[in-house]
Image (cartoon, rainbow, N blue to C red; front, top):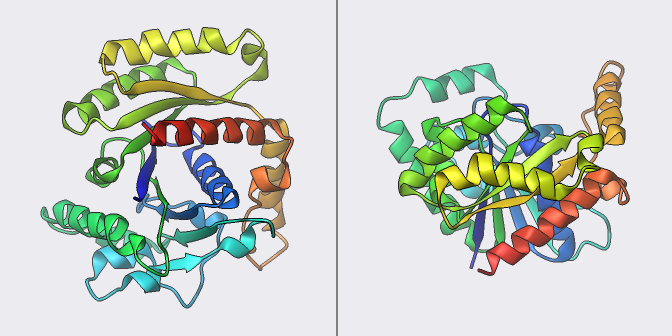
Length: 285
């Protein structure tokens, strides 16, 4: 049975997209058939890792028109993974075209409900069929509590909340999860991202205690967990900046490197592998 996992955050800039891409890639390497969908229709990111295939349409067009079929929006990107990959990785991208994004925003009041029905049909029916036969569908959501993001949470069995260890994020996450868990109540894991290593040296137990007291205990739900820590990785940051500078001199878009594949011993990679173990454990509950 397909497992639907949503990556979400109270606000933007928490790093959820890079975590989602790397976790999806590691799942595929391990042997699973994985599909990652860029469901942040207002500010998509995944295309920076898997550049547009000009023969394909986007998820933006899929939600705007009933004439766009699933094969037109999903494409195989397993070629971006190592030769020893045992599974498959597919991607559905959203458009960065400003006019299309505006059309999404200008639709009527019934659009969010129609989107939800289409999303359910996509992830629970179409993507479970050949040629995709998905084991996992990863949804990279838009931050906050927009109707689009709530739709993604509604179809997910497991929700990863990515946040930084700052007071505004802690308080905002609690309020957001109060809304989500009023009716949806998905299994939820809180992930702290970009933690400076000097705080990690004080011990993960102290961070876990903080998240337990500030986020989990106030919500009083049995299926909200502390999911782990991703420490700040300076090498990863340097590579991201290098990629940005490369775009000044190159018109060819090859896509950002998938860090956990190219840097197996990196701090970020080790954190992703721990997160992978956490997901597989919780998926079997």
